[in-house]
Length: 69
Image 1 (cartoon, rainbow, N blue to C red):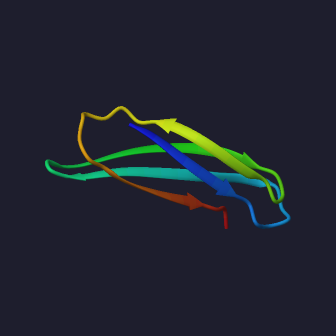
Image 2 (cartoon, rainbow, N blue to C red):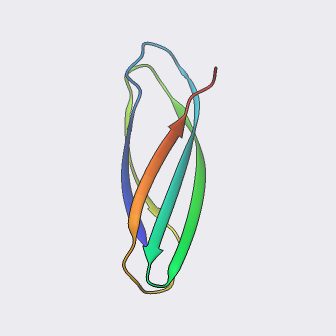
């Protein structure tokens, strides 16, 4: 399964973030996940394409970015 994601650093700082992707299918019920560490410059915009090995099916994709404290 190929997922396109856009990550935008809206702050003026530089640093590392953790991107978490989840693919969810209801028939059959299944959740697949992938993680990536990203380094972002101030106000940087990254457009990523991430392949997640998955059996054929209909999936909903969700992305979550974790910023350091």
